[in-house]
Amino acid sequence: MSNISASDVSASVRSDFDFSVDKFPLAGPDGMRTPWYALFRSDSMAVVGNGSVTSRYVPHSTDDVCALVDAAAEAFDGEIECKTHFRDGHYVNIMPSRADRVKVYGDADNIWPRVIINAGYDGKSFSATMGYYRDACRNLAMMRQVSGTTVSIRHTSGLRGRMNSLISAFNSLKESWGSLTDVISRLETRQVRMLDFLDQIYGRPTDEQLALDALGQSVRTVTVHKNRTTAIWNRLNNERDATGRPQLSGDVVSAWEAYNAIQGYVQHDAQAKTGFKGEFDRILRASRDKAVRKAESLVLELAL
Image 1 (tube, one colour):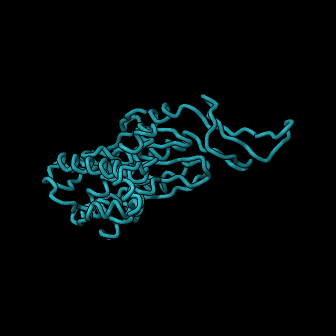
Image 2 (cartoon, one colour; image 1 turned 45 degrees about the vertical axis):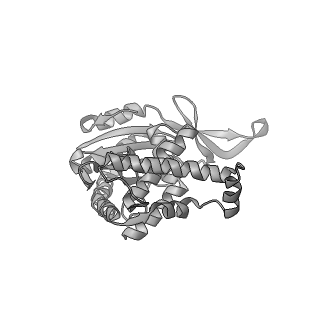
Image 3 (cartoon, rainbow, N blue to C red; image 1 turned 120 degrees about the vertical axis):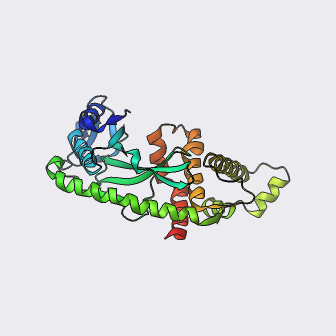
């Protein structure tokens, strides 16, 4: 994974993805021919994806990914850097200029735009999503339920021949930054009771389980609930300190804080136990996490 500047975006992305994904036929018993094919990386011969494809499937190329990045660079006036990642598909984290910083609270709770390009090998359209990076918690998060923050790009051969439409798609995505920051600003003004918020997302142990725990019996559901709640509260208080917010006297916090506490817990605390410590792994897994999606739905009900 490497940082790259706008002046050599294509060359650097091409260097990071210096391999092709090729299609090979799958054989049955005794070499019997089948209609199915598997995808393999040309450099490592590692299998790409979790399933098979048909003879009609055409894997996209590194040049197609570079076309997407070039279109993003054009839309953001060349003021970008990138990080790349490959996990059953190409991912590119587009980081526009820090001039787009937005203050959410005081001088220490700041966010910057981030665009995640996903060019997978699952037969679906490519996508690009406008998200944010929050320095107080080191979270890169996507709120896909905010209208306009994701664009789909149909995968066809020769993407570079469609540059005008690609640039138009990324211009639309650039404009969604204003919509996203408007929502985030409203979340900072809405309040939630954190304990109720956690119960809505994760549920709570039954009275019987709590009674057994009070008697000194080990109840896994109660233990998980206590440990998770403690970790989220520690993260919430640490982030309040980092952003200059006053010390809590109860459990009422802004919806923005509550949502980021869940994001932070999933990205940094819960995933540390499962080995997902890389930045992109954390981001991708959090974007699919049920608790994160539920938290997003709950706070957006307050903001929209």
